[in-house]
Length: 88
Image (cartoon, rainbow, N blue to C red; front, top):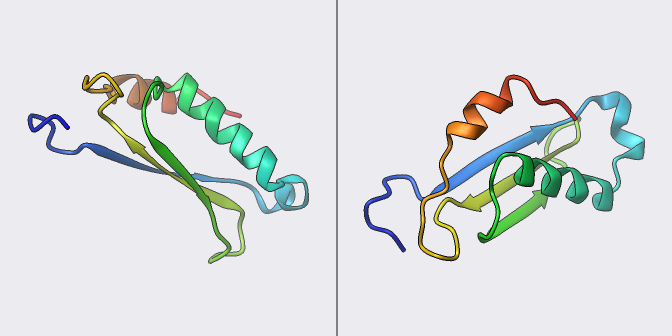
């Protein structure tokens, strides 16, 4: 734990088109989530990936520890910049 970090956990929802619903298996969605995390710099940390069906559109939630396994903060800067440019 790092007491200097005000928000130690990131919550991200990845939402997909209804047109892709039939081909988005659990395995495919986990693969997309892991690729997203790697591209956004969330590595060497704890995380959970959750898929649920509370809406009509397919989506998953990522809950990511923003403190890596070495006790260092994972910056959100890369996520903020790339989120506007990166598509799957």
